[in-house]
Image (cartoon, rainbow, N blue to C red; front, side, top):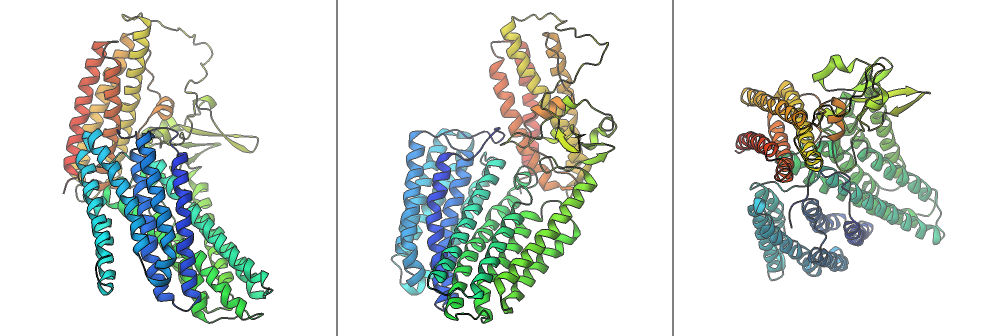
Length: 621
């Protein structure tokens, strides 16, 4: 059960993961229904507390499997059976939610949760046996998860008056397990895959919110209570859900996860902070459904006390604040957005006192969408179209997304065929991938240049074909040439990324990291030259053009602008890991084809692994 490649192209959610999510939606629906019933019956405090505990169990089990599957998913029979066991546990958990929400009885929920988590612990034991490089991490995960499950079972035996404190202690222990486990080494999770999985789960939760609210309004209409308040509630609910979707998907998460959030602290804040995002989205549906009940009882009246309106407005306010803090604020943003989200959350809470709180809150959310969208459009107009989260800058009639390393070349017009694609699904391109993306104005529309890396040959320059005879047979020359070309692309991109970090670095370790980055650049450039000359010596024309590097590099995207030393170190550690893994694959491929080229690849891999060691040591506290 080896780790997956975190730079794997076209990585998407599997059908088993989608089935996993669809079964979890049952538990989300039950939790939302329980909160709605508690609020409608006048027990909001108890309802919110029980909802928080139950939703934690749902979210935590889902999140831990999601990160595990992103790093390890062999899709073999044992893996499938253990995932199906987790799905079974989620259904048991869902079956126990009505008792937990209504009476505070957590027994069935705990048994379902224990089934879920124990199956995951078994998967971690498989990893410990089959992935020695991350064996300590896997053993810590297995031990931590198993120990927590023993604690959950023990809570069933303690008196009722101490059960809630025991639950709080176990929740804290569960949250600490991944932090402790990954301090021994990071698992090879995939940034785009994780981002997609979180996005899909939010869509599921929002869909459940829509379904819950629609069912409540439909039931009220079915009982003949078509009051004006219900129409306003339905309209406001739609605006709220639409705005929640728009705001969350305004900026891509994978650009953060591939760059500034690869470090442990920011990564855990992002991952754990989504508990409030998802819980608020689920609670919004419960609030809309709960608000429909008093509107129905009042017949034609639409003015209700503020506590009833708070069931709609408070979840939305929490959603706006957490999405801004966790998901949007780390991206480049304009000053107005820093104030727009807190102001909108305050206005939403104030809407609790208005006659139609759902509609008022929905209009505030829509206004926030307008402000943020207008700001993004203004930023795009200033800098050019963004490619995978990396903004460009205008250059005459063309817009060129370029790294600062090649400003003069960026100003030269390029043939349409030189442009590289903006990144394949499942992989974030490296910095060089942003260095040659050219968008041509054609007929009033933007058309991105094709992914071919060969520009049309200028007139008068003949194509010479192979002009250097190779000492190797054709098959060996082809194998070796591909390995050397891949190594050349990685080295060129690594030198560009390291120089970009060198220029934009800040933090308490500035000087040491600044000088260390120059050493990386020197190593990458030196070996790039040796690799290119070796390729030429065996009759393979090396291709180190920016467009080729853009189309072929496997390095994760590097963020624009200033970047903290901690984030740079985290990025470089992961970049070295990805590059050296590919270099070792090339070493194996050239072993019988060309031992001379293999020797060169061995030497450069040793040099890169030395840099990796130094950056890892720099990141240990």
